[in-house]
Image (cartoon, rainbow, N blue to C red):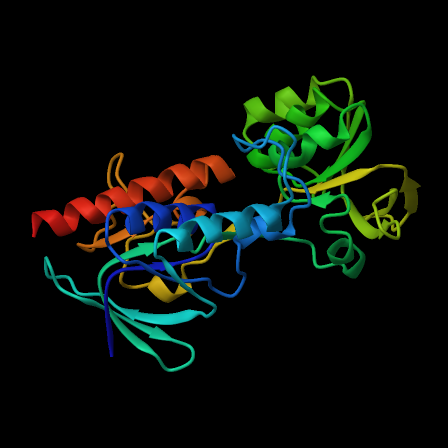
Length: 310
């Protein structure tokens, strides 16, 4: 049984930033990377909106640099997945973590940075071209398609918001809605329908994403008539939602109806003393690398102050 002051699970911007701050506070953090080391950014070819990179940086390189920075201050980074927890509800109690390789860890504090996973359609050609024109974040990647024709899939508020965002920088946005109406609020629907360069197609789905190394078109079909057509695009944005990686905490930590961890006020505190949440696992509004990093900093400071107060 290992004993640590701070256990961090998740290795995206939130987890690594938490590690940097925790290590500098002499909390000797142990970080487990999870099943996808580096998080969602490892599937992003270019990160152009993170402060400090005037020429941009590719996602995997950025995560490697964050890991090195965390390790420089003494963070121990392990490749592995924590698959179960027993949280103590007692103030100052130790939390027990079970790692997939059989390791058991007692931690005075736990910082959860497991993130959220974007939902995709599951079409093989879509998966092949992730990072080659297929994206799940218009705010992150839309800039690269300035003045070009793109498509977006989804009918909720997020899809509507991202479609109008793309319409401001792209020449044309084809919006594919699977049903005969959008799920978005009426206000968002009005915004979409009043935007002249959004081509809204109800009852339409993707049959195939076209292109070898990069997206150069879509084959779509009308799910009522079966009629297929091809459209030329250079970017495809999937906006059908995210799933927070919180399954192992169900029944112990408070979550909202979508499974996102609930934190108290402006802090990263969960309902369990000594357990903190940062990044996309508790943020379904912004979902940006920079905001995730900010909450990672907050979680480490909250953990430090919690231990000082014991």
